[in-house]
Image (cartoon, rainbow, N blue to C red):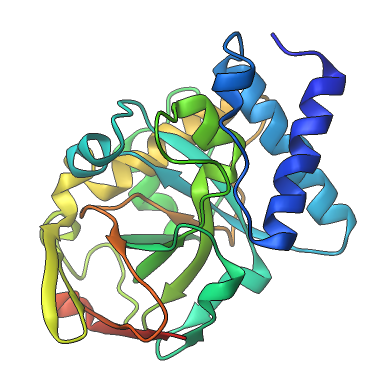
Length: 261
């Protein structure tokens, strides 16, 4: 376990890397004894500093919930991070790549809660009963820790590599579409780069939301009504750079477009 002083120091390093759009050395290379609990503590200190600075928490992201993402990262367990209001964008947005590090795109579904969700025994049915609507989303990854050799501890500490979210315009109730078979066809500059279906996320994308509610219970917390929950990617991350135009076709749930400059 890391000391409170070390946890605070690492949270500040990550905050500075975010401000300066830089990358820091792997935490696990410097502190091989660091645990998953330490990484969430680092993330928590960073989150609280962001809130104290005036940012508003609007939801949570879940990561590494599909085989595609686990194989792409070499990490085999889910993780989560927080999302602030100034990171949520509509389809058509132009994104400044200079504000991010190691910029990649993932294809996801976002669940907006009408009711709170609480563990320890939250199920898929509980999630579906609590959801107001589901909307397609693209997640912009923003990694402030060097990628080579990173572990789950490094990723969680870095707010699960969350940078921003682009939301589609098509909102669906959970009884309007079979969420397992929502497709994602991700193109860059007119060429298809990645494809997948939402069932790739733990068999059903809402299963990840149940996992998160149960995980939160271990820390005496719950998911609140109104929160947006990104359920995890069902494609591998796609690298993007300035000048790239991105389009994702979600079939019955419409399309999302964004451009990077």
